[in-house]
Length: 177
Image 1 (tube, rainbow, N blue to C red):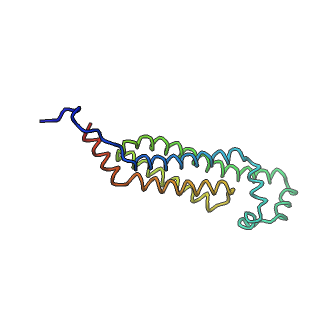
Image 2: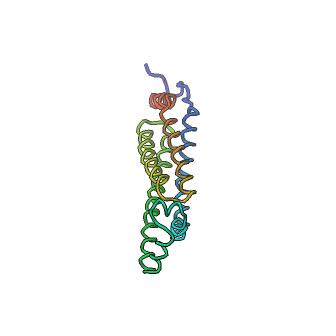
Image 3: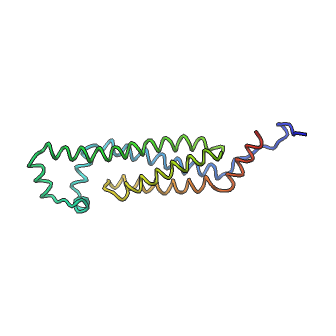
Protein backbone atom coordinates (compact mmCIF):
# COMPACT_ATOMS: atom_id res chain seq x y z
CA UNK A 1 0.00 0.00 0.00
CA UNK A 2 1.49 3.34 -1.01
CA UNK A 3 1.22 6.54 0.96
CA UNK A 4 -0.56 9.37 -0.81
CA UNK A 5 1.71 12.25 -1.81
CA UNK A 6 -0.07 14.68 0.53
CA UNK A 7 0.72 12.50 3.56
CA UNK A 8 4.51 12.48 3.02
CA UNK A 9 6.47 14.93 5.16
CA UNK A 10 8.06 17.85 3.37
CA UNK A 11 11.76 17.39 2.74
CA UNK A 12 13.67 20.37 4.10
CA UNK A 13 16.73 21.64 2.26
CA UNK A 14 19.74 21.48 4.60
CA UNK A 15 21.74 24.64 5.27
CA UNK A 16 24.77 22.93 3.74
CA UNK A 17 23.15 23.17 0.30
CA UNK A 18 22.70 26.92 0.64
CA UNK A 19 26.22 27.32 2.06
CA UNK A 20 27.61 25.38 -0.92
CA UNK A 21 25.61 27.55 -3.30
CA UNK A 22 26.91 30.73 -1.64
CA UNK A 23 30.53 29.50 -1.87
CA UNK A 24 29.92 28.65 -5.54
CA UNK A 25 28.48 32.12 -6.17
CA UNK A 26 31.54 33.74 -4.57
CA UNK A 27 33.67 31.81 -7.04
CA UNK A 28 31.41 32.90 -9.90
CA UNK A 29 31.59 36.59 -8.95
CA UNK A 30 35.38 36.43 -8.56
CA UNK A 31 35.68 34.72 -11.97
CA UNK A 32 33.63 37.45 -13.62
CA UNK A 33 35.67 40.12 -11.81
CA UNK A 34 38.89 38.56 -13.08
CA UNK A 35 37.64 38.67 -16.66
CA UNK A 36 36.49 42.26 -16.31
CA UNK A 37 39.89 43.22 -14.89
CA UNK A 38 41.68 41.78 -17.92
CA UNK A 39 39.26 43.13 -20.52
CA UNK A 40 39.20 46.60 -18.95
CA UNK A 41 42.99 46.70 -18.54
CA UNK A 42 43.75 45.90 -22.15
CA UNK A 43 47.22 46.36 -23.58
CA UNK A 44 47.94 49.11 -21.03
CA UNK A 45 47.75 46.47 -18.32
CA UNK A 46 50.43 44.46 -20.11
CA UNK A 47 52.65 47.54 -20.42
CA UNK A 48 52.34 48.20 -16.70
CA UNK A 49 53.12 44.55 -15.96
CA UNK A 50 56.28 44.76 -18.09
CA UNK A 51 57.39 47.89 -16.24
CA UNK A 52 57.27 46.03 -12.90
CA UNK A 53 60.84 45.07 -11.86
CA UNK A 54 59.63 41.78 -10.32
CA UNK A 55 57.94 40.78 -13.56
CA UNK A 56 60.99 41.80 -15.55
CA UNK A 57 63.23 39.70 -13.33
CA UNK A 58 60.89 36.74 -13.63
CA UNK A 59 60.87 37.00 -17.42
CA UNK A 60 64.61 37.70 -17.65
CA UNK A 61 64.06 41.22 -18.96
CA UNK A 62 65.38 44.65 -18.01
CA UNK A 63 64.42 48.23 -18.73
CA UNK A 64 67.40 48.49 -21.08
CA UNK A 65 66.32 45.42 -23.03
CA UNK A 66 62.72 46.65 -23.26
CA UNK A 67 63.85 50.11 -24.38
CA UNK A 68 66.11 48.52 -26.99
CA UNK A 69 63.17 46.46 -28.27
CA UNK A 70 61.05 49.62 -28.51
CA UNK A 71 63.85 51.45 -30.35
CA UNK A 72 64.51 48.60 -32.77
CA UNK A 73 60.95 48.32 -33.83
CA UNK A 74 57.86 49.69 -32.20
CA UNK A 75 55.80 47.32 -34.31
CA UNK A 76 57.73 44.31 -33.00
CA UNK A 77 57.31 45.50 -29.44
CA UNK A 78 53.58 46.02 -30.05
CA UNK A 79 53.30 42.46 -31.34
CA UNK A 80 54.85 41.20 -28.11
CA UNK A 81 52.39 43.27 -26.09
CA UNK A 82 49.49 42.01 -28.18
CA UNK A 83 50.59 38.40 -27.76
CA UNK A 84 50.88 38.81 -23.99
CA UNK A 85 47.45 40.43 -23.85
CA UNK A 86 45.97 37.66 -25.99
CA UNK A 87 47.28 35.09 -23.51
CA UNK A 88 45.77 36.93 -20.55
CA UNK A 89 42.55 37.52 -22.49
CA UNK A 90 42.24 33.82 -23.35
CA UNK A 91 42.64 32.92 -19.68
CA UNK A 92 40.01 35.52 -18.78
CA UNK A 93 37.61 34.10 -21.35
CA UNK A 94 38.06 30.57 -19.99
CA UNK A 95 37.55 31.91 -16.45
CA UNK A 96 34.34 33.60 -17.58
CA UNK A 97 33.03 30.44 -19.26
CA UNK A 98 33.86 28.41 -16.14
CA UNK A 99 32.10 31.01 -13.98
CA UNK A 100 28.94 30.72 -16.10
CA UNK A 101 29.09 26.92 -15.93
CA UNK A 102 29.54 27.04 -12.16
CA UNK A 103 26.55 29.36 -11.91
CA UNK A 104 24.34 27.07 -13.99
CA UNK A 105 25.44 23.84 -12.33
CA UNK A 106 25.33 25.44 -8.89
CA UNK A 107 21.72 26.48 -9.47
CA UNK A 108 20.90 23.00 -10.75
CA UNK A 109 22.50 21.55 -7.62
CA UNK A 110 19.91 23.09 -5.30
CA UNK A 111 18.19 19.72 -5.36
CA UNK A 112 21.56 18.13 -4.50
CA UNK A 113 21.21 15.57 -7.28
CA UNK A 114 24.32 13.45 -7.72
CA UNK A 115 24.85 14.38 -11.38
CA UNK A 116 24.71 18.11 -10.68
CA UNK A 117 27.16 17.87 -7.79
CA UNK A 118 29.52 15.90 -10.03
CA UNK A 119 29.33 18.63 -12.70
CA UNK A 120 29.98 21.38 -10.14
CA UNK A 121 32.98 19.41 -8.90
CA UNK A 122 34.43 18.82 -12.37
CA UNK A 123 34.04 22.45 -13.45
CA UNK A 124 35.36 23.57 -10.07
CA UNK A 125 38.50 21.46 -10.42
CA UNK A 126 39.16 22.94 -13.87
CA UNK A 127 38.59 26.46 -12.48
CA UNK A 128 41.04 25.78 -9.64
CA UNK A 129 43.62 24.53 -12.13
CA UNK A 130 43.27 27.64 -14.26
CA UNK A 131 43.55 29.94 -11.27
CA UNK A 132 46.63 28.12 -10.00
CA UNK A 133 48.19 28.97 -13.36
CA UNK A 134 47.12 32.61 -13.06
CA UNK A 135 48.35 32.95 -9.47
CA UNK A 136 51.75 31.42 -10.21
CA UNK A 137 52.29 33.19 -13.55
CA UNK A 138 52.69 36.83 -14.53
CA UNK A 139 49.52 38.67 -13.56
CA UNK A 140 48.37 41.84 -11.86
CA UNK A 141 47.89 41.82 -8.12
CA UNK A 142 44.10 42.07 -8.55
CA UNK A 143 44.12 39.06 -10.89
CA UNK A 144 46.12 37.10 -8.34
CA UNK A 145 43.81 38.18 -5.52
CA UNK A 146 40.71 37.13 -7.45
CA UNK A 147 42.49 33.90 -8.40
CA UNK A 148 43.17 33.07 -4.76
CA UNK A 149 39.55 33.89 -3.91
CA UNK A 150 38.35 31.56 -6.67
CA UNK A 151 40.62 28.77 -5.47
CA UNK A 152 39.52 29.10 -1.84
CA UNK A 153 35.80 29.51 -2.49
CA UNK A 154 35.70 26.71 -5.04
CA UNK A 155 37.48 24.32 -2.67
CA UNK A 156 35.00 25.23 0.08
CA UNK A 157 32.09 24.80 -2.33
CA UNK A 158 33.25 21.37 -3.48
CA UNK A 159 33.62 20.16 0.10
CA UNK A 160 30.20 21.56 1.05
CA UNK A 161 28.46 20.00 -1.95
CA UNK A 162 29.66 16.56 -0.87
CA UNK A 163 28.66 16.69 2.79
CA UNK A 164 26.50 13.73 3.88
CA UNK A 165 23.48 15.94 4.64
CA UNK A 166 23.28 16.88 0.97
CA UNK A 167 23.33 13.24 -0.10
CA UNK A 168 20.55 12.40 2.37
CA UNK A 169 18.56 15.37 1.11
CA UNK A 170 18.91 14.21 -2.51
CA UNK A 171 17.81 10.69 -1.58
CA UNK A 172 14.81 12.01 0.35
CA UNK A 173 13.78 14.20 -2.58
CA UNK A 174 14.13 11.29 -4.97
CA UNK A 175 12.06 9.03 -2.71
CA UNK A 176 9.38 11.69 -2.44
CA UNK A 177 9.08 12.12 -6.21
